[in-house]
Image 1: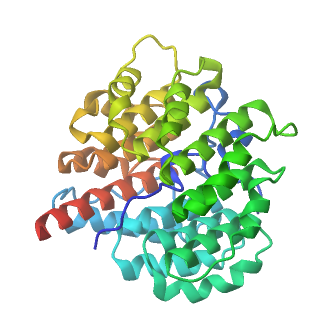
Image 2: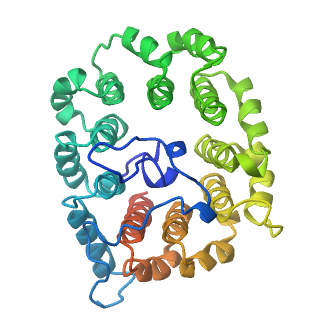
Length: 367
């Protein structure tokens, strides 16, 4: 069954969770971001084994899919919350009963980031039979998790009081502000437009300037989702941020990809294929992934495939995401190789990409 790719809550942002401690912050800009600063930590010592047995390479049969599912199932039991969250997110391309099982596990996780991803997926994938399990999360210690529970209950037809989201939207906590904006945009309730506009005019003096820019992009995305198309100009302009604000450029590319903004496609193609080294490799890959979201055939496939041999595991992981987003069955070969990567984070990304391509093929066959 097809699961609508509304949001990539984990791998599509690469850094939606960090792996430090039992309850990590769930937004990217709390961590150094560029390749030179080692933006994603090596996870070889957590959860999954660093290498896997060399199995048969039946990329068009059940073998590669079975191996992908095995990797994700193992990752659910990892002692690393980053891996657990990304595994659950990747399972949205699995059969509904498998996804439901993973989500139910995630709702009871000790880590708030894992609970957040799991709660959001109930609404995104319409697992409404599991909606009753969201009620305890309305009192979760994490307000971000509460917001996710509100979103999914709303998507499943329950009446939800939006007032707590107004308070979250004006919080001094940038993570909570961003998540509240995300939830309000995805709910699709036009009554949220005024509160989102008000939040966008807040000076946010207690929040770092780079975080303010990221939050404003999230607010603009939410407004676009609610019909305020003029906010697209704000997001398009952010693509041209300076190299020192590469994270802003990357988020703008991701948002425009999710919104399927054809107008900006030539800009994204240019950024993805840039050879001047003005932007970090991460930005090129994120731009390529956004191109794949909008016009899969126009993704610079050769450039993306070049990152399969990168020394940086997070670049190999984002490469897998891009290949999965493009949805071309020919990408199953390199993705099957990435299933054997020495870094478990890359294995999870490749597994999710394989399931996404397999899911798209199954839907195409039905139609």
